Length: 195
Image 1 (cartoon, rainbow, N blue to C red):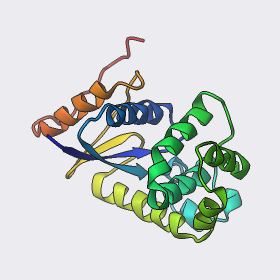
Image 2: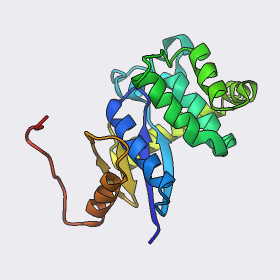
Image 3: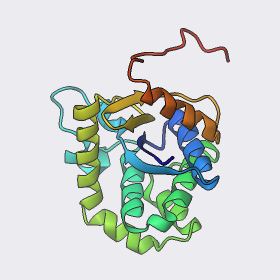
Image 4: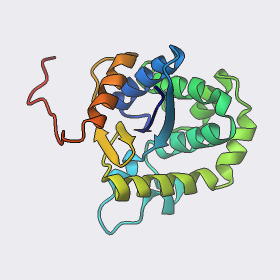
C-alpha cells in the first residue's frame, strides 16, 4: 500500500537528521512511500514578533540555516535525481563532519561532492525562486498545521512533531505513519527520555 506524507527539515536539527536518514533508508529499501521533503526555517521560528521575516532581510542577516535550505530547494526542484544524495551529504556535513553549512563555499563543496553542477545550482538560488518557495512553504506550514519545528510529519490535514533517537530506521517512519492514521490520538509524549 502506497503511503504519501510530507516531512519538514532544517539541516541544523539533529532530530531532523535522524528522521530524514530513516526516510531515506526506507526509500532505499523500496518502501512504497511518496515523500514530500518540506524545508522549514528554524531561523524564522526564532524571529521576534513584529520583526521582518528572515526572507525579507539582507542575506547577511539570515542566520545559520537559510543558505542550506535554499540550496536544497534548488536541488530538489531542478536536480531531483541528486536530491537524496545532497540531502544525506548536507546532514552528514553538519552533524558528522562539523562543517559550517551556512557558508556558501561549504555548500558548493557538498554539491560538487555529490556530482551536481554547482554553477547551475547557484544560478537557481540567485534567481530568487528558492527563497520565495521557502517563504511560501514555511508560512503555509505554520498557518495550515501550526508547525513549530522539525521534523514534522504531515499526512493529509494531520501533522505531528516527532523526535527519533535512532537513525536509518525505516520502521520508525512506519510507526509514525500508523499513529497518524489513528484519528482519536491527540497526544503521545514521554514524560522523560530513558537515554
